[in-house]
Image 1: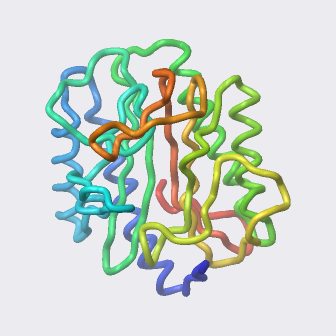
Image 2 (image 1 turned 90 degrees about the vertical axis):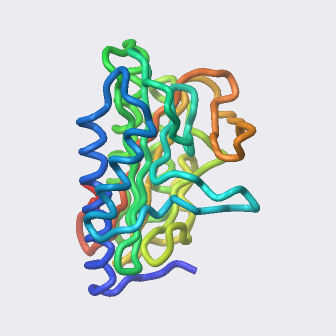
Image 3 (image 1 turned 45 degrees about the vertical axis):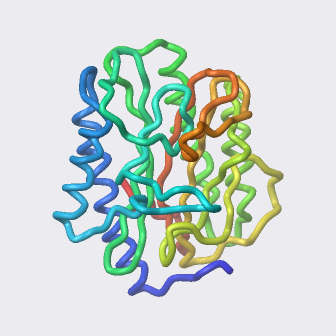
Length: 252
């Protein structure tokens, strides 16, 4: 079921999304060689709680998995998504994808960014650039009357046109009343297909882009998704509201 949000619900979602955006800016200012992802996680959790929110990922479970133990997902280099923060220091040349979800007053916001740790290779720079660009290409299609796979197609076209691949086992989703809602928003697809977009939908569009194969595996921790070939991966996500005109990006 796809929820069409009321003006009051949109206002509540917007507040949660603002906390998400602020957390990502905070983390972006902290990322450097030597800092650990557990330090970033604590800073994020403290900020969320001090702003009246609840870390949406902490304690979350899916398909019988153990509860996710942290407030952010921190995925390094070949980790695609759902990496668990730990005490290991980040290293020069790595890339770090951070996913943040916040619940406030019963409504959710969700977004992700990939950060460079110090100086990174040109290939990783291009991977990050193309991933963010693909989000914006997809977001242009998030307008009343378009179809979900119009978003998907634009993301896939831009990514594959630049020699990378889109992860197929994971996808974007509706968000707002719940952390994960219909519709699913894959990062590949045929234009003109999928659910029709309507004013008041709130969507988490999130290209997950691999430098090599699109295939992925899950580590023994039950959460961390990694590329099957060990090549790096990048992630860029925002919560979007479909309006009568241009889509509104709520997590900027």
